[in-house]
Amino acid sequence: MSWHTSRLAALDFESSDKDPNTARIVTCALILVGGGLPTDTRTWLLNPGIPMEPGAIAVHGITDEYAAEHGQPPEQGVAEIVTALSEAVAAGVPVVGHNIGRYDLNLLNAETHRHLGADITDAIPDAGTRMHVLDTMVLDKQVAPFRRRVSQSQGPYQMKTTAQTYGLNWDDEAAHGAEYDALMSARAAWHIGNIAHLPHDRRPEWVRALRTQRFDSLAGVSVDDLQRMQAEWARRDAASFQAYLRNPQKAGAKHDPNAVIDGSWPLIPHQRGDV
Image (tube, rainbow, N blue to C red; front, side, top):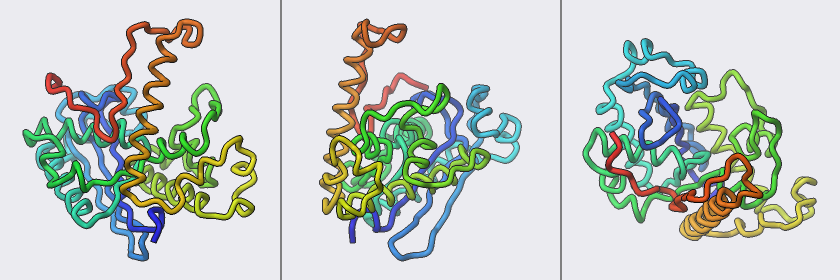
């Protein structure tokens, strides 16, 4: 069974702000899907305990008042999420999500440290060696590079763009709910893996038209090898973005001569000074 047809644990969070070090979990979905087994969905609503940014509320639609009334205490919710994720890791189920290695797992890592007093690699037994991650943003950037923005408001590799690229119907009203986004990331992973394992002449026309056939690198690889490959691709992407930001001619108004983009993946070292 190939990595894309195996059982997958789709993970997504909606949170109180965009910074994984300072954000609090508001909702979480962990969905076991594929592998010839029934879909198993678990969701959580947490009371973050701090005021959420207006932009975050506009995205997920959950107000401070609603979360305070209906959400469970964050320490309880984080403990349950970590336990559920631990069970998936122990069963050898890869964890899939979109931008999961730059945001979601790092958000959970910060929350685990905040409420349980330990990093996720300590809270989940052998997570450092047993937790396999499929990041559909990393995969999509690797196999289909140089994609342009769809519009001013829609970036080239955000979840909506990735979903639409691989022929998935996108529902703007359902989007940015943790359950919907988690499922879409699992479906995108399946489509990316499926294309990689198709003969060249059966791949979609847009794939055949790419300057390089990077999809080939995903065919027939183990989850261990794919983990290492994604880490290297993420490191290169971070280094490229850092170089871009430091280049005044290329970055323009975004220019930052001292920009530092950490290339760690799928966990960025937790900044313990954050609260």
